[in-house]
Amino acid sequence: MSAADHVADPPVRYEVRDCGVAIITLNRPERMNGWGGGLAGMFFERLDEAEADPAVRAVIVTGSGRAFCAGADMGDLNAIGAATVDSASQTDVSKLVARHPHSVMAVRKPVIAAINGACAGMGLTLALACDVRFAAEGAKFTTSFARRGLIAEYGISWILPRIVGNGVAMDLLLSGRVFLADEAARLGVVNHVVAPDELLSRAIGYAEDIATHCAPSSLAVIKEQVYTDTMRSVFEASDRAEKLMHESMLRPDFIEGITSFFEKRPPNFPPLVLEKEDAS
Image 1 (tube, one colour):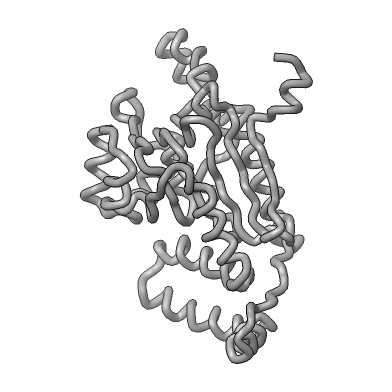
Image 2 (cartoon, helix red, strand yellow; image 1 turned 90 degrees about the horizontal axis):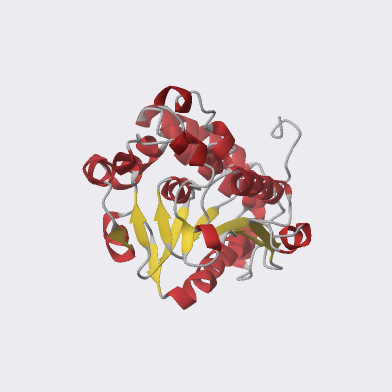
């Protein structure tokens, strides 16, 4: 493939809709959007771009072709497969993943996964790190780690039990079995299952509704609460929520939210600005 082709067809596509929704598309369909250095690095670059852009109020992550992300790019893993056990143990796996998928949870804006096809291993970890998950009917899921001689990687052992409970998480992690989108919804792995040709439009509609009607400052604080309160007792979380609620009532967003409700119009919330202390 020529350099011009790489420019024209990058491993990750990025667009921002007028509605305030950014769409990040994993774009190596010939490799089932396998997670590797080039794709992973560019994914996080685009995610950082969406985080810093005041015009973006919600983010959608999806895949091109038949897969959302079918796991680690086996091309990047060829060196490990050909190596001895001793040399493979010295492999810097961080080069394959760029940043850990759980860093998606630190993004202050809602991140919605639109799972268009195969979602396995690292791909499932990435999807679970998103805040809400839509899946196309027939999409296949698997943790796969135990069947590859690996362990529950990059935070999935933390987040999966919190989404589906310990019993279901143990079933999926220990068996490494394949399950389809309908079962994924029954187990709580995904929130919505839709027809494949409606997947992106439904996810965009959901994200656009959030972008139009929800205060970016509220979304940022709510996300931080959900992901950090799991480390606190209910008493600590409640006391902290009272403090955060008082702070939210001092922001102009609160006045706008109440005023727009009584005036029966869409709210006009200010955008979320990436402050210098948050960028460190």
